[in-house]
Length: 406
Ligand SMILES: Nc1ncnc2c1ncn2[C@@H]1O[C@H](COP(=O)(O)OP(=O)(O)OP(=O)(O)O)[C@@H](O)[C@H]1O
Ligand SMILES: [Mg+2]
Image (cartoon, rainbow, N blue to C red; front, top):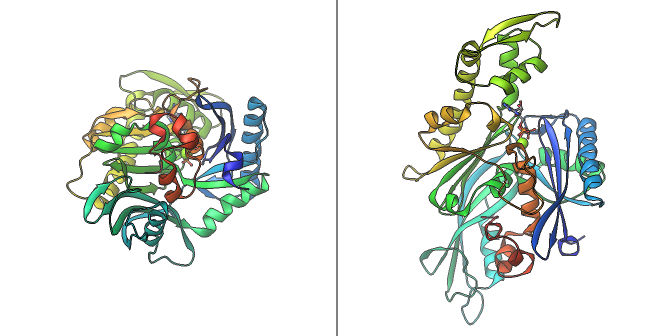
């Protein structure tokens, strides 16, 4: 079914390593309004990849049913988040001749040049998830953000291309389908988290989004308004929990509690930790906990930093680090990230949007809310997006919705 027939209800589905989250919104006359949200534990994913179909289906069904009940509507189509170690990104450039006799760039030309940029050397088991236009060049004039209507004979585009393993993606979509839902589109998760939390100004100046989840840490780097580098590291908050469990000789459940309560917190407090058999408790100090937590967090952040250093131009300007995902809630994570990156750090919660409660604005829901924003933008086709930028549902939405796909 075509998107346009259903665009008034938009639903995002984030199947994480620890939780599945479904968010449903309606695009009304005053903009987008969140009307339902559901969350359920996710036991069938590891590091962003499906390892148990049945568990994953169950989790999708549970989260979606909750969202439907809260919204009081039944929906069929969802925008699905994708992540995992199989994702790769690259930048590409393509050129076409402007086709019309009047030498004016049309939507068709834009579509053709973006399609041309998708011609990359791709193994047969991989597919393109996004081809995001970074900027266009018309007759040698670089840095054009919307070339439609411009006069010129030669149209070039620089795109950020994101690819993934076809079978890993298919497995996610199989679960979605078996849970009774249709996939309206797939979005690489850090792009969704960015859409929910970053401001256009931040993307313009240069910003790194880090989504620290349970099983993965996703990276998206923006410069001059658009994504320039994206990646995933298969390490997240779950490793930290098992480190604590081993270090303090306690259960994973108790370690998770300790992590959330004290994290990398400073001070010299002591606290009781239940022993493995659960029959007694042992005293530990925050200083001890820091010795376990800090090296692992710093290691993960350094891995992210190294990936960025290795893959973006040396002269790239970055103004800030924005952290989302449940890992953003780790007590005292900001100073650690500030030290590793040498940049100011802020915790990213979803930007204001109709119907968003304080609870929903927590960093671990940024991906699901971002998926809804992608859906509200109404297109899966990058070229069409550009043509429609001036009208439709988009025109009624907030300013920062307009540049989502870039
Ligand atoms: N207050 C907190 N302090 C520290 N860690 C936290 C806190 N709250 C949640 N977390 C951690 O965040 C992680 C879950 O984050 P999130 O919900 O973003 O992951 P996910 O989306 O399920 O996984 P992924 O994105 O990796 O597939 C867990 O490891 C959890 O322990
Ligand atoms: Mg996540």
